[in-house]
Image 1 (tube, rainbow, N blue to C red):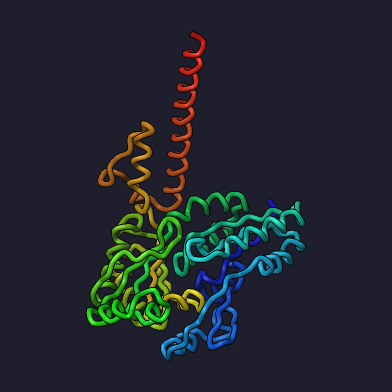
Image 2 (cartoon, helix red, strand yellow):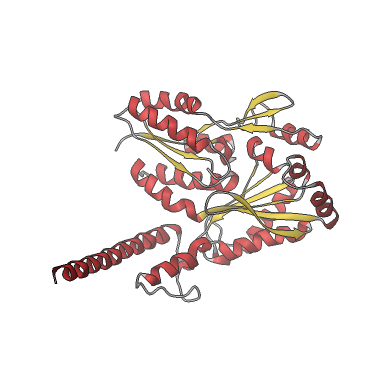
Length: 357
């Protein structure tokens, strides 16, 4: 088995200890505040507390993505040392950095033809991204090779997500994402938007919830609706926040009470400077593993292929752990391929028979 590294963007919003413990490399994005540029380096260039305090005082940071030259410079030492690479990228639905990554990978693949350089658009950000990388790191450290991990990641990414809510609309107003009228009305009515990362990796507002208390309850209800097993969810859950630890702690407490079978206590971390530049202060994100996100679409497709899938109330998927779900999914994909091959072959034979008449 070839040796390889697992790397990701700093926008996974995980602490330095995580990268060291799990042996994950990370590449820093950038932000500019008050005319000065900084690295999104987990609070080293600017403490994250200072970053959000300056935002509270009116600072309007801008962000910039990693360019192709930075990717090349980041990957080259590992390639020269004989490592293959699997890099997990911030969602292409909110950043163009995946395009720069592709250019860099194409160029480096020509320069180092003996090395394997793979990358994946995570379609995720912040805690959903962090959870995704965490699960990949665990599988890598358990002995998975680069090709196996790549296939696993491509299956996994559509079933990990993060929901976000914001209690302070100031950054949305300053960034031009809402009008002054909408801001005023939202403030009077105490509106807290609830958002999630959709199938294309875009951050989409889905509900306008009145009061912080209700949006906290709603984000936990969303987890009950979508997490594998519902209240019996037994995977991991990560929570991040932008200068509102008390809110994040309260949400984490609610989750731990509602989901007693969690694999471990909810992990809480701060939203980083790049994601935080767009969310502003007062944002909480919750990441966990989903099955139901695409369930209706998948079940409908399978039925059209002649595979009888039980209804959600009859299915046993909720009682499966992650590895069992992955095995079941692979089995279903094999069945689909067989059905499609059989259907296509029958159609081709029918056409051939017609043409010979």
